[in-house]
Image (cartoon, rainbow, N blue to C red; front, side, top):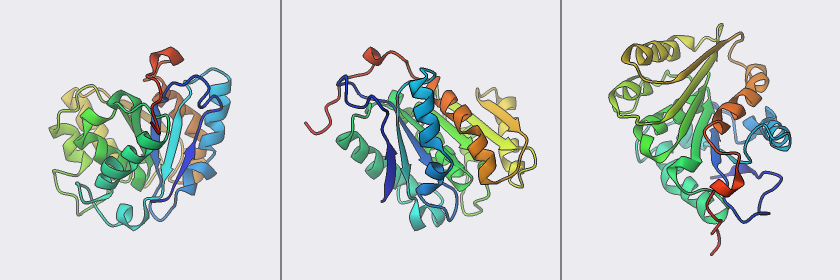
Length: 230
């Protein structure tokens, strides 16, 4: 699997690990999508301004498995949990505990972030779904976030969902929000102006980064030492 990785400007200076944000692209896009939207530049600016904690951002290329599977251990879910995350934590100064991991994605990638996190809530700290396209008709109730978000024990998982009010994929994600609200499941719901397009996500990358980083300390001493490569 190809991936792009952003390392913070202070990377490696203090010998500590960093929290990691895994960001998934949309259908028929590639690992360049979040990069093209300015996610790494926004992170650099916010870190240097002291507004968010230094973090690593991994932007994997989902390829055909992300577009042609619905969930479970033999899908994109399995690739992320069993291959990509262990690889990142073995080769970079990544905080290798659930508290140090966050998943996010846009459109089809938003489906995947919720699918993986709702089925594996004990393995990640936060999940964000940005204009999530919850339209996979092959996903049964054990996979589909519209069901697993209500039926599974999500523990203390932090959840963020946003979408443009004119987005053509709004129906199912809004229903998930309403169902979770009725069930008393804590989550953040943000309804913005906009449609399902790159300018919408580009306008909100800083908002996303601030939210993910709220779950992590700004004090570098709070992170374990880096053991990557040892």
